[in-house]
Image 1 (cartoon, rainbow, N blue to C red):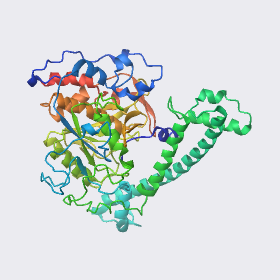
Image 2 (spheres, helix red, strand yellow):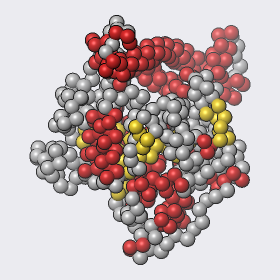
Image 3 (cartoon, rainbow, N blue to C red):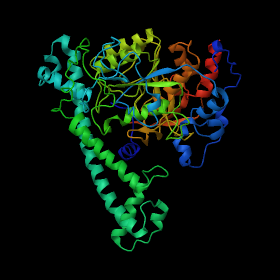
Image 4 (cartoon, rainbow, N blue to C red):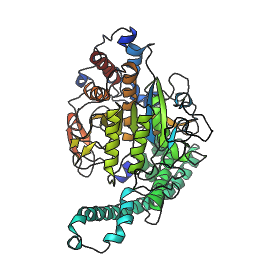
Length: 558
C-alpha cells in the first residue's frame, strides 16, 4: 500500500568535503536553539510552498531541511561520488524532463538484445526491474489472507481448530474483521464523496456564473449578493467547503480533489477489497515460493502507455533527485544521484516476495540507498523481507522507510516492512523509519496523518504538500510519509556521495543525531487525539536536517 495521503480525504473523513580528495573540512556551526524562533504567522507564498522542504527553520521560520543553506554554505561547487538510489515503488517515469538525466543505466547490459548480459538473472534490465509485469491492481493483504484461508477455517471456532493452526486461524479472524470494517467505511465514503462532488459542481456553476470567474475566494463568495434561497444555499455550501481547503486552493481544485477521492474509494471497492478479484494472474509466479524468481520484465514504467499508475514512484524519485538548477519544475534534494527504478508496489498491497527480491536486486546492482515508501499492516512472509534487509545491511546499504499514514503509534501496532521481530528486537542497523512533518512550525508540526512511535519511528522529515515530478512532464503536490522518506533518502544520498567511507549504520545515526530538536508540544491525530512533546514521537526526537547532517558527517569521517 502506497504511503501517500490526500489532504481532502483526511480532512473530510476525520472531521564536504572528501578528505581523501584534499577538500577543506567543514568548520560551520550546527543549527541549534530553534525553540527561540518565533512562529510564522503569515501564509506561505506559492514559491515558498513549492520549495518548503529546502528552507531553513532559523532564517525562514519554515521547518524544512536547510537544503538551500547546505548547498550555498557547505557544498558549493565541491564534487562528490555518484550514488545509486533504488526506488522501490509503483514505477518511475524515466522519460520525465526533470528525471531523464538522473536515471540509472546498467552499463553491463546491452539494450534490447533479449539476453541477460551481466548474468544477474534479469534480462535487459537497463534501468531497473518490474516485478509486477503487466499487473497494476491488487487486493489488500488481509483480503488475500481471507481468500487463502477461508476454505480451511470458514465456520470454525477457535476451540475446533487444531492447536498448531491457532495462530493462522487468529490471523484469518483478524483479517475478516479488518475487511468488514474497511469495506463498510469505503462504501460509505464513496457515497459521501459522490454527493459532495455532485453538489460542489452544481453550486460552483451557479456561483461562477454570477461572479463571472472560476477562481474566487471565500471572501468574494460571502460578499456576493445571493438573491434567492437557492443561491443562498449554494453560497453556504461552498463556504463550508472552503473550510476543507488549504490556503490558495480554489473551488475547482477542491472539486478535482473530491473526484480523486471518489476514484480512490471506487478502486478500493473494485480491486483492493474485492474478494473475487485476482490481480496476480498477469504475473504468473507462485507468490508463496521465494525461489520462483523468473518473472517480471524490464518495463519500469509499467504496462500503461499513459503512465497513470506510476505517479507515486515518479513523485518519490523527484523528491530525491530531480535535476537541480536545470530551469525546470523543481530541484531534488540530492545531486550526484542515479535513480534505479524498481516496480514492485501495485495499486493495493505489495507482496512480501516482490519486496524481498526488489531489495536484493537493488543491493546486487549497486544501490547504496534504497527508498521504501509503502507499507501494510498484515504480512504473510515478513521473514523474507527481514532477511533481505539483513542482506542489505551485510552489503552496507541504507534503507529509508516511510512510517505510514494512519496516525498510528507504531510502538503499539506493527507495520510492514520493518526490521523487527515481535515489533521490538531490531535485526539490522541499516533501516530508518521516517514520519511526516507539516510546513507549519508549532503545535501542528507533525502531519495529522503521520504514524509515530518513540521506539519504532526514527525521525521526521517534510511530508505535507510536497511539490514534485509526476508522469508526462507534469508536477503536483502530494503528501504522506511517502514524501517524507525520500526527503530523508536525499539527505542520506548526499552524505554517501561526499563521505563514501561512512557505513550505512553511521549514515542512519547521522540522520537521527544531527536533526533539529524542539521542546514544543505537538498535536497527534488518530482515534484518541492527544498533545505530547515532539521529542516523544520518534526515537531521535529530531527533524532531519541536511546542513547539520553534513557537518556531523564531516566530523565523523575524520
